[in-house]
Length: 204
Image (tube, one colour):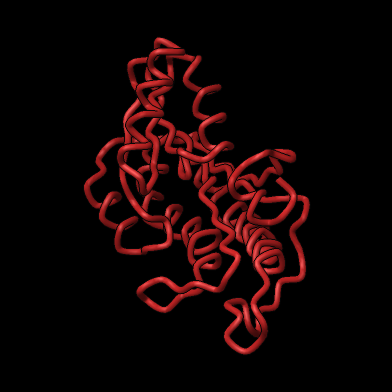
């Protein structure tokens, strides 16, 4: 039976590498979730050519926008066997979504939460299923009094670190809640990767 894997942030260095590795096993159907339609389609074509896995497709959504995640979930019908949350951003200046949410918090934390929330019915259909949240060993210093830097000076390194700490906490919370549903939830540190994200943090 073909198993379905959803990967957010699939056009980034980490997401693309994960998709490529999983696609080598032709028992998996890979769905790349990204906001850039052209880039996602190009990566899907590259992975199909390299791995021979024809079951690779794209869904387009901005992970900082709740309604876009809800929309793709509302149009989904199949069981999901694995959800891998990779999408992340580290803008050097404080940005907000149109809804007024600080961009890193919206993408790196709420995006993970919304993906789990809205695709949970399909993860339940695919049990035993798995959720993997990409976090970081650099996680820490989460300020729950001001996670969006509304009353303190914005620093993208601090914003990134606290978003990854929130992802760890989110993982623990969902792992406890979903274990009775036969859904495993883990966080991982992918290692130091040369990427746009690491460049924006000043070490890539």
